[in-house]
Amino acid sequence: MTSDGLKNVVLTESEMSYLDGDTGDLVYRGYDITELAERARFEELFHLFWEGDFPSQEQFDQTCSVLAENRPISDEIKQLAKKLAENQMHPMAALRTLVSALPAFDPDAGSSPLNMEANYRKAERIAAKLITLIAAFDRYRKGHEAVDPDPELSHAGNFLYMLSGEKPSPGAEEIFNSCLVLHADHGFNASTFAARVTASTLSDIHSAITSAIGTLKGLIHGGANSEVMRMLLEIDQQQIDPIDYVKQKLAAGEVIMGFGHAVYNTIDPRSPYLRKMCQKLGEEQGETKWYRYSTKIEDYMEEAKGIRCNVDFYSASVYYLLGISIDLYTTIFAASRVVGWIGHIMEQYAERTLIRPRARYVGPMNLKYCPLSQRQ
Ligand SMILES: CC(C)(COP(=O)(O)OP(=O)(O)OC[C@H]1O[C@@H](n2cnc3c(N)ncnc32)[C@H](O)[C@@H]1OP(=O)(O)O)[C@@H](O)C(=O)NCCC(=O)NCCS
Image (tube, rainbow, N blue to C red; front, side, top):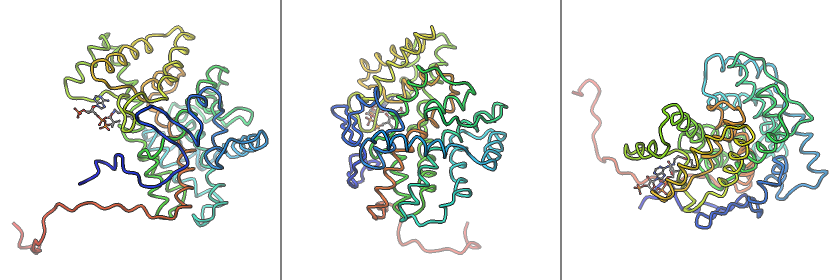
């Protein structure tokens, strides 16, 4: 028996997050996501995931100042971001390359992966800088200069500010903060697993995050949100009924991006919040068609196929309404999930077990080597 992509295989124990695929619950270290989505600041999750519980005010202030101190990137990294932008690299590929270049300027780069104090310092630098890297890359490829982070702004606010060069409205900042909160951790998803596999070999934290980013880039993992927006735009451009569009895709044997989930048999608990945000932003901006198309598709998929939408479905139009470029959506996922990845990497270092599954060999046996010159 093979395990169908390790589906339902319990590999180890984790205190990071709990998912119940049958009830549609997602819990971060004991706290239900439904409450956190509306009330928590993304910066609070650093302490929650890395230290085990929510911070006191003093600890929260400390996290905010560590992030503010570490968000700026060096001129050399900016130059690299510019080069990658000039070469029209995919934003996730650029992010992967930029993160793996960060150790060149990290004073703890040479430390042992078992030096936990150095690991946390490296982790703070990576998580803080991720949004600056993404924003700088995006601005360079659009022919602008990078915008330096503003130490007075929140993490969510800084991301929007560095992308556009304009201070975001409190409403936009709040919505984007909730998006970051909702994406921060999700059990043993593929990118988290990739990060843990890398950490399990006692490789360094930059390598583990680089593995995770490369894995998240995949179309049926983090890449789905960009595809959802492309689908909505196609529906709009063709002026086709969203249900007819989906019917055609299904008839052609295609999957509909933003639907289905490897764990949830019922609702993805993150999607109702994103749906609400999509509606709210659309109404505020007088642009409700994305919400309209999306709800039609959601209803149809549920009624006709029994498949519910996932986190990527409504996050696509939320990011679009926030004015973010479509191919940047997966990088937002990374900017949030990095906090979860790091929590898992730390758990993996503490566990000290090499992840090394096996495959059942089904190829031929007992073949005889034939020298190259004698082969037909
Ligand atoms: C996420 C995903 C890979 C999970 O795949 P999975 O674990 O194989 O899903 P299931 O086993 O529950 O699929 C059950 C059935 O629903 C179908 N299905 C699942 N997701 C579907 C989708 N998005 N569109 C159409 N059909 C879908 C499957 O093809 C399967 O049909 P079958 O029984 O006739 O073979 C898959 O749903 C998918 O590719 N979704 C689109 C990409 C996406 O949104 N990814 C982000 C995930 S957060």
